[in-house]
Length: 126
Length: 393
Image (tube, rainbow over all chains, first blue to last red):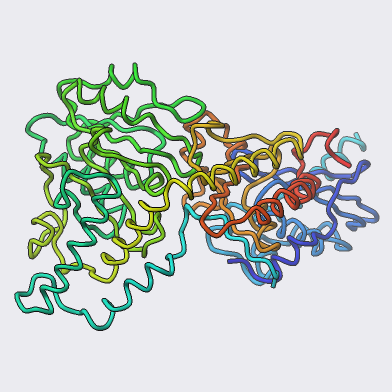
């Protein structure tokens, strides 16, 4: 059902955890649907210096979360905004069709975290 | 990959008993006659088929072997019982009653009938999955032609008091269909003393081959065929009979009848050891279904804050095969309707885990799963944002 890459990330997820003093936090999905992801980012000089995730959901949900943190780490905020759900799935060697929509929310969570960062910046500069 | 192979998903599929496979072999090669043929090869085939029919009849104590109609499995039997009976009786009434925890092969035929001029009632159940007798009695009207209630639920294990239900249904002068797929072979069933009119039986659920089943139709109860053709099975199920599978089904029924009491007792001990062993090893874990009135092989649990599919993957990495009612394991992306019907919230249903035991499972296997489960739950809770602070390490 899942590629070896997906299983690798499920077995040993990268960047799992929280960043207590995060600069941006994004949460998407909800427990009713069975998938909930939170992404934390730490930003320095417009780059994602650190990123962590917490996920409730299936194997695909955990693996996509882990993969998106790998893809985002070290990127500029603009580059990170360009990471798509498709990129995440491709990097994992593909996902079962039924999981493409329901569990492939990690890119959305990353984008939400970046938007949250921008919002906080705006408020701080007021 | 993993050295261990522990199979605990017997509701999804069972291995064929080696004695059954052996009984089937000659019918895949030497005995290829068609039971409808006049010549000896055909008559030998017919004899084998009738022997098998008698064994299936004996398993549920049917009054005569002709009351057993072979089908392609439980799904077809349920379709025949519901649609076939409703078509036959629609001049007498158009109301059908069932429950909200039936298998899809009962739910969907009833829903289909409701788009073809019939009225359908889906009875609610309590937290254990029991139907209310008072409500059932109240819902039966003179228009009600059929009540379909499962003997036991494979997902939460709950066994209905069929004898009492049957008394209510018959006092109200209507007809009872019982889907006994999950129960046959685990619980002794007697269609005569329990007064059942139509009963669905599956072969694979008693360690027979897949793709074969039966509908018991009580003498005097009439159903319309849903598959028309050459008129086999007393005109109720056309198509050349699947003889190797019928012979295997018969052998499986014979073995089930002989071994049901010892094997069920063994399974109950194993089940209770399993439930007791899992309970209390991690906080926020619960049993689905009733603690005692449950199928001997059924261990249905749920864990808060984590999701079922990720538990299944974690177990599979250790060689353990189980099942879950989580939406993430379903084609529909909806959590199990059974878990929702017993009052679980969606997020609770997502955390469900189902172990169904079988003949080859041992105490050592059960103890192994009890041992590995806490670490699986703890790891996934560590990843989950829903886990409360006090559970994080």
